[in-house]
Image (tube, rainbow, N blue to C red; front, side, top):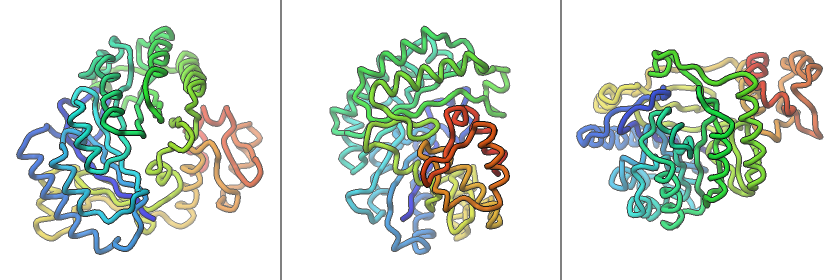
Length: 359
């Protein structure tokens, strides 16, 4: 089984915390991307044909800006069965019922909205273009269009976020017909506007309190935590993201897209002109490659797999990691349950530290 990822880099504006490759939503650039994706498909598909496609994911950027006229030709090329999970990321401000229906009619069966907050003050602080009401309307539009697998992103740890504000957002979630939530804390990456402005996340005990509150309220709504930052109703865990955490091979198309194939990780040019020029010349659009040694790869897969609440099978734990695991168990960060090695409640809070130790 494999997964396919398509990076659709268009944005109306770049959010101040965003560190992904994005470009203006302009007709000439949309045409250029369509050409690049078609050329890359011709170049790559012979290498991966014959493998069952478990999931397809359109990320970005804001893939919904590409429209059905951009997404449709991509999907038409992909052999797949009815069980294939097809996810499209979208921002609420662009999502009318008519647009969402056009995506649903293409066969897209999962939609993920970048809601981030349902408090208008927090949305302004994050530089988002939608209001809380617009976000809720987009979710209801998706349901009306036929989507039965709807996810939203929520963000906490904002610089001036209060418990009252966070409780308000969480209280609004229960009104929405959603099956999945991705819960992220704000991180300030280099080269973002927030980094240049010196913005700092809330951090410390206040951050921990907001996270604990978020977990509590989401689980009360029947959204169980199945990964460090992912919550789902039964049967609605993200098949695509689960593939990342379990080491499923995937191929990324589009500028800046990453792939993981035959133990090698590689990335396309993070520049649409260079990306398309390479493909026109019959060359690979890849500008970075990395292949870890078998031991390093096993340790990395262990660390990534531990993101899942259920943990990893002991049979997949490399012997070379045992001394670190023993130490982490003594510190109360890892525990053994049946045939699984998994994070403790405290370990879930300190995952980054654990991953660093294991890798």
